Length: 200
Image (cartoon, rainbow, N blue to C red; front, side, top):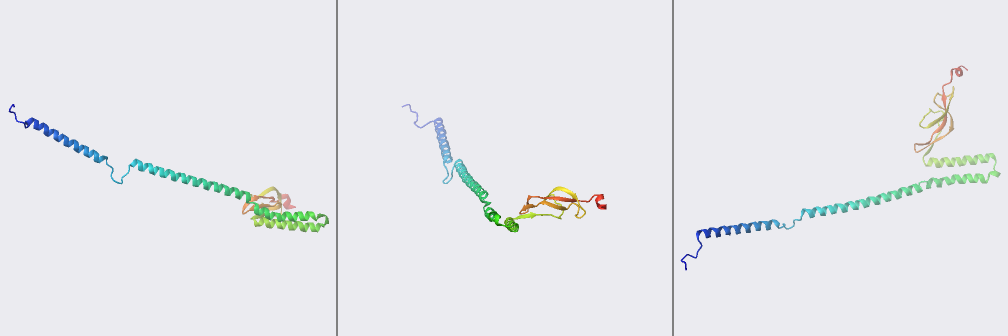
């Protein structure tokens, strides 16, 4: 035995105390990191949430795009069908006119001029009725002021009887469909008489 005490010296005690404090600080730091790493119950990773939202929006877009494509195809079919059968009614009505013309031709050898005239008048009335039914109106502007939007001037003719710039003669009637011009009336427009014609 050297006679030295077994308990640590002052320096040894200080070293042990510092080491103990270091261990305590390290344990506290580890505990804090572990707590930070824990995810609160019910909380989700923001990246996962954003990805899920992006997937949801993409699926909505795909569904909407598919619906729009179906609507476009359906509309195209409807338009095609409308074009195909739009004349069905008017053609059916025109069959009546054709029947009348064929009947007149079949009896032509046995008919007098008067009968033929009556047949033509009947057919013309049938045709006029069909056209009126579909909104077709005659443009027969005899005596009316010349309208370049509805009339086509073939020539001008001096006249002492008609007002200048009025329709003197109708070469060919015009037609409009529901107010829209189909064909202008071809007309002769009255012009003011020349001075020599006025004296005569």
